Image (cartoon, rainbow, N blue to C red; front, side):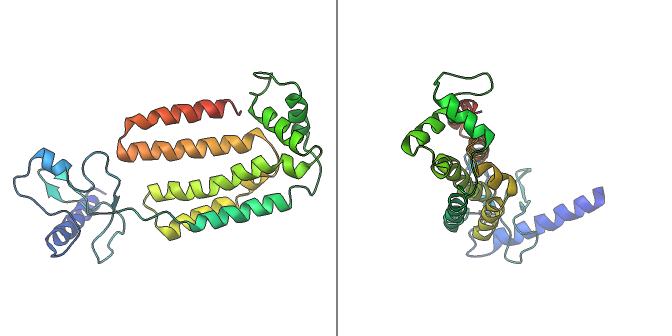
Length: 243
């Protein structure tokens, strides 16, 4: 295992040297006698880097970090991250349309009846849940009394919103358009997501909150911007108010 790992690192180092010396390459140039501050300014090396590791043009170990000796450390051949796959919004629209089309096929779920009753007795909280979903049930019931489809619209919207957020999370892991669309389509046909989004429930909004928190945490880890932890705290607090 140790010999294999050493051989792999040697191959990576050789590829990196070839890439760094190739004329016209967009990869960082090797600098003799560079200081640590200069090393930190190289693409993909310093803090707050939002670039994705990639490979030389021969495609060997696509998207793996390419090792190279640089003042006893490691540098990576990097590229700008792919753009957001806007096609994921189309997938989200299809998910929303399906949930709305089938939202009124049968009557209330027992939890929805409980939310409706709780919404008629507004409070800061209830023995088994915070007030958010009960307030949503109250508002939707006032807009269209007796309509199961309208009552479930907020859940359908929350479910559809998870689809492009999943694509955005995939982009943070350096996924290109194809990977983002695959992730969006996969979550869009997920039975747990469609089942939770088919009725008004605390689970639907809980899923949305955690996807948002996960996305923000990944952004923080990639960019090393600790100010965004405040947003994580706000989202976590809002999630607690929902479930």
